[in-house]
Amino acid sequence: MARVRQQSYSVHEGPDPAVDRIDRAERLAFVKDGFIKSAAIFPPFWLAARGIWLGVAVYAGAAIAIFGIAWVLLLPSIVTLLAFLALHLFFAGEADEMLRAHLTFRGWTTIGQVTGASQLDCERRFFDNWLPTMPVSKTLAPIKSSAGDTTPSPGEPGSVRPNQAGQIAKSRAGVGAIIGNLLSPRPRDSTR
Image (cartoon, rainbow, N blue to C red):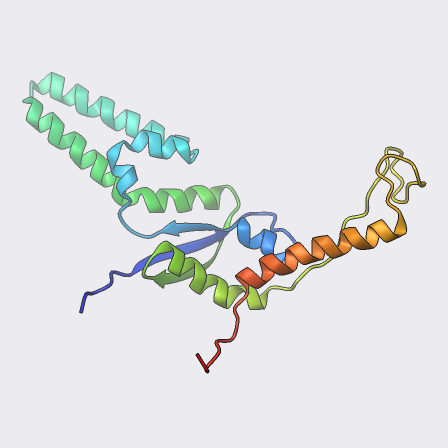
C-alpha cells in the first residue's frame, strides 16, 4: 500500500471580507507549509511575483555579499556556486513564512489550518467545515441612475421594469444557488 504524503496549508482572509460567503470564499488565500520548489529555482522572481519587495532586497544584498566575499578572498567558483545554492535553499525553505508575514503586514488574518493529500483536498476539507458556518447573503444592490436616485423613472438608462427586476433577482439568486451548491457540503447517499 502506497503512503500518501500529507500537505498542510494555512488559510488567510483579506482585510475587507465580502458579505456573501461565495465571494468571501473566492478571496481566501491558501499558503502551503514547508519547502516551496518554485521559490528554489530563482527566489527574486518568486518574491517579486508576490510583491514581497523586502525579500527581493534581502536576496540582492545576500547575492552581492556572496560575490564580494568570493572576490575579496579569491574563492574558487565551486564555493561561490555552493553559497548560492545554500541561499536558494534557504529562501525556498522560508518562502512560506515570508508570504505569511507579507499577508499579515497587508492586513490579512489567518482563519485556519488544514491538512490533506493535495491542495485541492485541503481546499475541499476547509470549505466543508467553513461554509456551513458562514451566513448566506441574497441581497441585491439597488440600481442607481445617473442622478443618484435609486429608483429611476421608466425609460431612463439603468431603469428596470418591475417584472424585469424580479427576473434579474431570480437569475442572480439562481447563479448564487448553483455556485453555493457546488461549494456547500451535501449529505452522502448511503444507498450507493
